[in-house]
Length: 118
Length: 165
Image 1: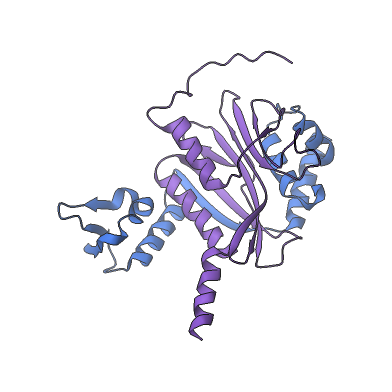
Image 2: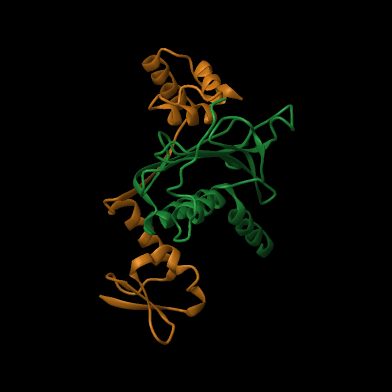
């Protein structure tokens, strides 16, 4: 385990990304513990992002590019499931109806991002 | 040459790619701090009215983000970068607690700015459309944090009686 010292002016950025692994010492230097040797601040942040996206069992982020064809396919699946067009769902949902449908929030956001409703 | 390099970095600083990274960093931050739980699918797609590479739509499918108390934040943002400035073309931020209490900040096109202002807020009911300031994901997350998850919050746990319409 290697101690990496990062200059004081970077401290404002660090707590947002490094969370529990950040330790402030009496002389106000920041020490970040990295196993693979000395890393730059940028690399240290990336290391933490990678860790957050892949290994935290309670919290995980997956980035994905999607297409409007995919969004349309998901809308059609919901339409078939509830025997209701997305246009009718969106109209009723905006009037405060259909909140009892478990997929209502997800369906509404698909309607919002779909180019069908422009 | 120096000017071109400088312009490139300025553009990137305020551009679509930079904003996507910003949103990812924001969610990692809230997850790391224990506000968010579970698996988040952060999706990006194009928007037909925005030239490719200059913007697009960000959203989380399904119920959106799940907070530690099972409250949710469903959101979408359609953003265009114009002259190094980010323009929110439309957005929707819907925060809902397990009790059913919700608020929604939204930007939509309108033909009646009194009945339905472009930037508006719903609280508990789909009507009325209260006029609101322009919002973004970061501001909404901060608003949720201080009102529902800080130690001195006065909202959580209160009962609210709503007269039927």
